[in-house]
Amino acid sequence: MTNLNTLPQAAPRDDASIPLRNLWVLMLWASKFWQNGKSRSDVEENPDDIPELVAQVLNHLVQERLQKKLTDEYVERQETLRRVRGRIDLLKTRRQLLLEKGTVACRYQELSIDTHRNQYVRHALEVVSKQVKNSEIRKKSQSLIKRLTFLGVNSRKPTASEISALNLGRNDRDDRSMLDAARLAFSMNIPSQESGSNNLLQAAIESRLWRIYEQAITGFYKVNLSGAKWRVTGQKQLDWPLSYASAGIGDSLQGMHPDIFIENKQTGKRIILDTKYKKILKLDTRDFSNGRFILNRDDLFQMYSYLRTQEDPREPETERTEGILLHPSAGFEYDECIEVQGHRIRFVTIDLQKSAQAIHDSLLELIESSLEKSPENTTRQE
Image (spheres, rainbow, N blue to C red):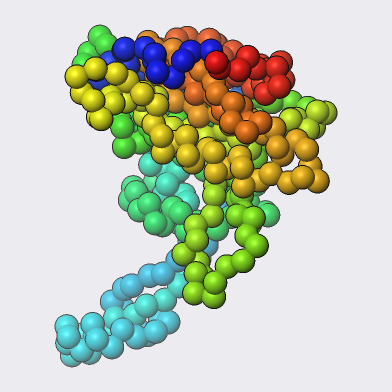
């Protein structure tokens, strides 16, 4: 085990970049489309095929919905009519002197397929039609766009709030799959870099990639860890073991929500994994002259809280829960651990410059290795 006072004097470079094909893999892992088993089993080994795969599946799902009939909903309409329909918009009618013209402003609801969900799918088809290189897939997408336009689905792109407000019921299974594919198509619509380059600078997508990274790791483990052996929960709430709380504290005491909670069903082994989209080492600001890089103490304190507050004498495994702080890196590897009051805490990076298969294997090995290395077997630091 590395002595914490002699950490490497180097950190990931600021200009390090992640291959575009690996970004596609991360977005695939993060999507419900992939987590629901709609993708090919070998897609991780062929990341360059992912955009074409998503476009093909989206085309297929839209084609199926068109054969059955697109879902319609009551939508709000506002029109100036010569007869009253629905409710009268008095303000608009009086302000524009519509009565003098023999018309009236009306608000009414109409059953239509020009809904937010169908508009969203239509816009996703436009995205993939411009993104894929395969001419047949592109022509199919363009053909479906024309059909949707003919049926009355306009080209307006729904806002983020309108998309988040979509309510899908138990009978909307077909729409759910189609919307999952559409969401993945939008997530892959990242601006390309200069011609001839297969990389995107991390800085160019920093605002989006931290969320993609977190969701991708959660989605990966939910799919790849055997359901018979492991139990994986994302964003599980951990409660504070309070023996007393004053009346005024109310909701000001924040809950704890680690990114991933993993439990081995056979051994009871528990792992709390938190993803951190930032460098694992930072410059020691207490002494710039040494140029020393250190771990982030806030992350360590956070993980320590997760582990210690969940201890229960009635469940011995809770006193040996392992914590993993998982950071992304580019051309830099780090895997160190400490033991604190029976809990093993690991500080690990995943090199996103490696091949998709290598990233896949590293993530699986990270969890499997926890069974081989328990706190009592870990060599203690002198």
